[in-house]
Image (cartoon, rainbow, N blue to C red; front, side, top):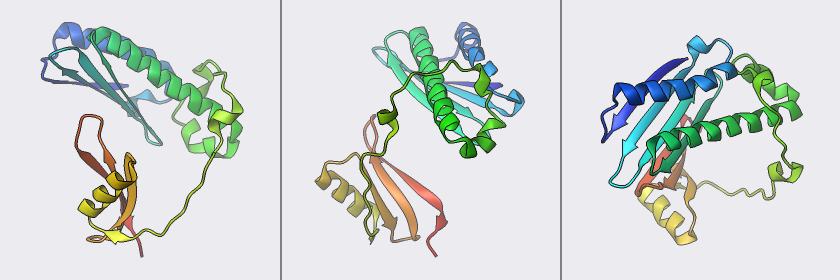
Length: 184
């Protein structure tokens, strides 16, 4: 696994780099062909506390988590625990749906996970909703999202005919996710 450690509002010292690399090396056992896996850790320092964002890039999937804590090293421990939980949950899902595990099974060593005890109802779809995507600009999408009281809103961007999602960011402001393929 390749490591990339980035500091925001903090300089990444050798001690931080060594501790982070050591903690992240726990994740190596979960990946097959780990030279193709990139692990990016972003460390942010605030007046009170720190935030750690860890993103693991594999060919079939991206794993991501972020944790805020008063102690930087504890934040890394919590973040890695969250990543391991995500991966255990993925293993459980893939075992239930054997046909979907083909591409993921080539990159992730599922046999190294401890089975997660999870109830069936936690993964059930409890509501399905469909609606016509109206072409609109980003400002209108944000206005509609706020009017609905939601944290995200799906719409068709009128400028480039792409399916887009605007969302409210935890740090403040808004973000947009767009599909790369256009509607024909």
